[in-house]
Length: 406
Image: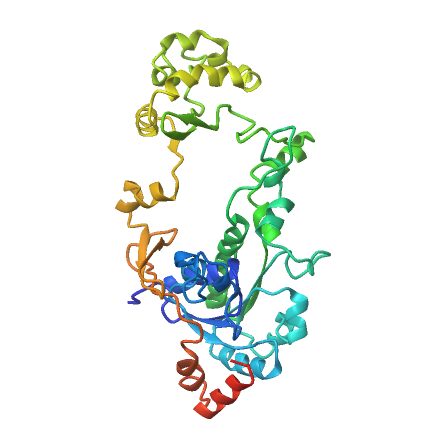
């Protein structure tokens, strides 16, 4: 039995940054042999940090280390003919080819899907780019912020009378990376069943737009455009982040949080939480429409309780009442979270920066559990792969190095 689920799968990855490398990280941590093909200067994520003591070092970038666990690194300039010859020798032994360039760039290099499918008919060609390989925006540049803007997620976030807002971090990149990973696995399953390769084309803009909840349906059914409503959900108020004694909590009473007209004589969980059963007799508690319109007054009702209780007290009490409240942790809180610790979510990996704690896999498996190992140093597998597997001599490697190909 395989030690990990994807043992034996061979992946060549020339993508850089976040989306493509995150997809191949998920493959590599599950056992796939992922050959990360970097430009001779290295993946650009090596330049982004964060770095220990804020001193730039391409081998100590926290972003690079997080995104490239369990891989091996080969340096190769795939934009030149001699580099493309070497790359195609790698592809001859690969199951999956992952790229992160626009279709026009790949075409100029002779590495677009149409350029390689005849030579490698069983290869799964997986491409992630800002706007996909087709359509009028295919040659546009973009990133996570671009994708968030092009989806309705940004339009719906923020105050009604202010500009749209975006969440922190790079969610568009990670969403696209997960969709690319899923597409690769689906293509591999199809190959195993029906034979032949496939072309997986992921547009970051498409991937993020898939997370627009029901905005498209709302427009299709009602002709309504959902507007910004602060940081909260426009339906089912409260569904919000609120301040408490020592931080913030997510306040989500849900459908069962308030007294039901079908059970008028019961005490609602929200009234019990706020330690005031008389609240159930107020329109703000009994009528959702009133809460949505008079949300400032509702927050005024909650403030005395929230301001005098800690996040831990509030969440524990709310959860005991079956209300899905949650903490709003900072990263220090997250790393110390007892639930994530119990699930062994965080992993320690060795790196040039020393031992690092990084997020683990987003899923658990009972038999072939994923496991991250150290991210590779730039070009650390050049000799093993180019000489040991492809048959190049040391003289060949020296010549390619002198010419800037590796």
